[in-house]
Image (tube, rainbow, N blue to C red; front, top):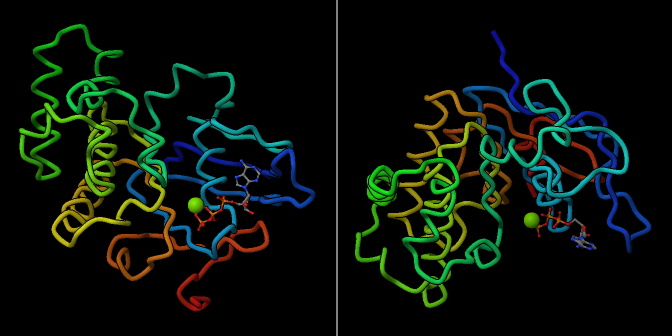
Amino acid sequence: MVKTLLEAKKIWYKYPAMDQWVLKDLDISLEKHKVILVTGPNGAGKTTLILILAGLLEPQKGEVLLHGKPLKQQLPQARRYIGVLFQNPETMLFNPIVYDEIAFAPRQLFDNEEIIEKRIHSVLEQIGLNKEYLNKHTFKLSYGEKKLIAIASIISYDPEILLLDEPLTNLSRKYKDKILELIKNWREQGKAILIASHDIEEYINIYDYCYILRSGKLFENCESLQE
Ligand SMILES: Nc1ncnc2c1ncn2[C@@H]1O[C@H](COP(=O)(O)OP(=O)(O)OP(=O)(O)O)[C@@H](O)[C@H]1O
Ligand SMILES: [Mg+2]
């Protein structure tokens, strides 16, 4: 049985300063055990779609439903179900020390620092990062390291829906493979995953559905439209 966790219905969105709609009457459903890949040219609206699905931007028309009910009415509590990886990890990290960055979300959910510490060590292991990273300054990390810590900060609270904006960009092969493995495991566990990326090839063995976003709409069979 298909279980939809998050869906967008008839979404219309434009930024206040723009004349043109970025998204036009767009529908999408994120289901348990499924990975959706959304590709499309620069400026097509992939990041915008992720921000709308996460409840961080509000569409002018249409609605986003989490577990069948309007997401808007379930915020901010609903944030624990949705993990968002921003395209630019620099906009995600806000704690000075890596440990606190990864611990931030679990600290909102659990009261026990021992449990939190165990989680953090398990997260680092899953990504393949050395535990020496925990004491590092987030602001001094390289761009790729920032991306990995941003991913760690999402894994740490185990959301059931993952919205990943270019999760592999700027990562070396070793870490790309780790993240791809993680995505496969999440899919098996029953999470609903949306990846926005230009890099269709990387996800060819992972996605269940692939769409191209163009002129504000999603088109199926993105491989055939690849530029
Ligand atoms: N805050 C903003 N204010 C005004 N316009 C914006 C804003 N953010 C994005 N846009 C515009 O909205 C459109 C969609 O942008 P978006 O970032 O969603 O595209 P994208 O598909 O993610 O592109 P990329 O592949 O380069 O990441 C673009 O024309 C962009 O210039
Ligand atoms: Mg983008």
